Image (cartoon, rainbow, N blue to C red; front, side, top):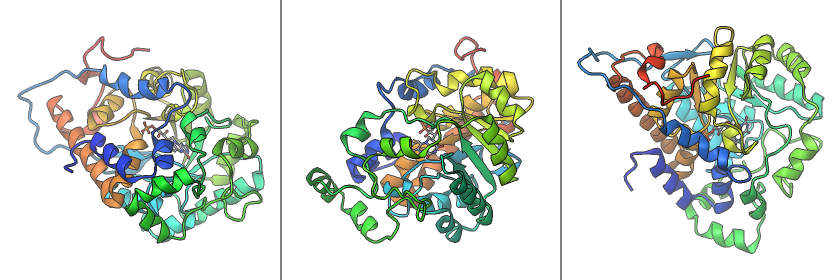
Length: 383
Ligand code: FNR
């Protein structure tokens, strides 16, 4: 199969990854309307094509939270990445470091912080979920510091879990429950099975040793309800910031009021994100929410965004509307499920190429000079 788009990677991943885990990645919450809007709203935004401008020596280099990036695109934190492909977090982190973009390891990863650190050479970012057991959170923060993670990405939009019907129907768990349906489905995925049988990393690597491990969890929803702290508030952000002491990114902001609070918290960046349409179904798309937030706080805090990016065109649309950098979630998971590390690299290559050419068509040579002027008025959301 010739791979030229992210959609090609998605189709291949669907063939190769057991349904339970493919669905876990591909799902949104409830009716999935926000999940769909994240992608659809990007396509409504049109470019102004320019010609006969000098397009030599183009540059995609930029910075995110002061760190140099080969292009302003990071890999988003995604739970259970090691179930899309054996050792998935390590493979994705390696692809990202070779490419020169940040990799963010989820709290809910299969490979642990230490595993990823031992198998990579550059610092990665660690994403933190806040659980009721604060001593455990402190240990996680300390582990991330000991592993030389160069940013803590604090996710604030998952204190309760948006219901994803597919996960419930599939009895999502890790490692997978060996029901007849699951065994039959997995038998049709020999590459995946061989990989998983060949690795020790099958449970949630960061949670091992925690009082209530999740390797035997019956469903993600009930475990989240038991463990995650619904009382999380901005006061907690303050102690987490103090305990961590390094670069802090607040993830999951969709409203200018919360964006101002994030800026007040002294964080280095916020991520405009609705969790890839997996939490509040019926929320705005991320790209629709971005301009108002960028206008409200863009002078005080770096603004990032994620949700629905499926091409380099989408990256440049988000940059034009005020993002200093973006994250991709499902696109790299599709690459990983399709072809392991090579698939993540392929995903990044596709996006880089599309980003470079689109920038050129818009008459620009430096990604750091992208602004709303490249977009056709009336086709993008205005605050
Ligand atoms: C996520 N996301 C997520 N976010 C987070 O902060 N911690 C996590 O553990 C996870 N887990 C997770 C798993 C899967 C399978 C997906 C698809 C997403 C949300 C993620 O970081 C990001 O916000 C979205 O994926 C961005 O949307 P796209 O790029 O997937 O459309």
